[in-house]
Length: 410
Image (cartoon, rainbow, N blue to C red; front, side, top):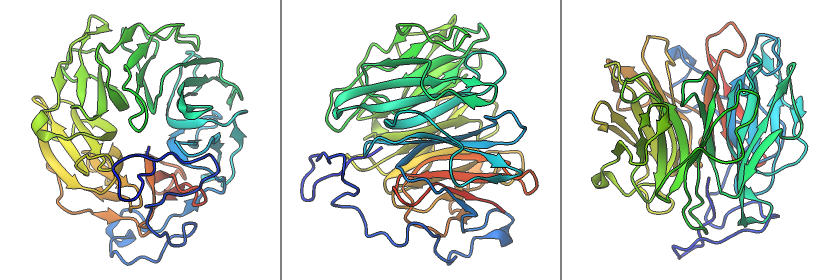
């Protein structure tokens, strides 16, 4: 998520809906084709080719993205949300046909919107994967709030209009998790728009197991903040899921789960000494192998943040690794080299995608793989075995309108 900063000023400047660029954006090269490999980090290392093997042919400001078997045929399809804060875009499913993603979507929703990140899961408990997505801004862009939409999957096809939705707040990210242990997924929502609006309250909606989340949230954060990403994880190892939020202008935080409901007071807030904070994206997992959940957050530097990708290690959740990254954005923990531990994929705006290796519970000081294309506006990352033969592939959603979303393989 980002907005133009006017040159020579620290104030934000809104663009109209027909604009396609920023005043201070770098000069881009050929955004539709990967540049030749000059990194020396390629398939010889047993990882990914530095050049993308697939690029989508569907214009839009790619933002949310993830893999799931939408059509129930046993392979992984790609779901992408377009829009961001630039221009209304569509939700799209790129079908996996015999191990290859189609470059044009097999499904789009009926009405475009300023969509943010998405979550995929079985919302109505019927065995199909459904789609939940943040609607970052409303129809009047920064003048009106967005909300959340749910698209149910009926026999392998997503509905074209949402069967459940809620509005009245700006939201860039959502997460699904069973907070109360009833077997149905609940919905955590990050709330806030930090360019032109007041802070908001993160919230949780309780899943009914039939595709809905009620009329009102069952929990609302007492403090108003700008939250831009959210996840569920069991940080205190008690068998219940806590809610973690990546924050702008205040410390990232975790709310405890007390007997199936979140508490009002955070169980952890990132130390002010590690600020300023401009959290963009987070991920969770046991990086150091101690059996406890660790937290990785990208802190952007557009609005005064540090421009870092940082790992907070449990149980005390103190910064244990830090990587400089201008306009730090998407992060993803995944066992890239299949050696039993979690490696880190990350990127920024107008940057390459990089992967650092986990060696004995510690991230390497330099990347083991870097994409050849260096002008990707990285918004989301996800891994899946798309072709069924060569291990896992890496997907990135690219905000650059005409560039297309991308996939790398061995």
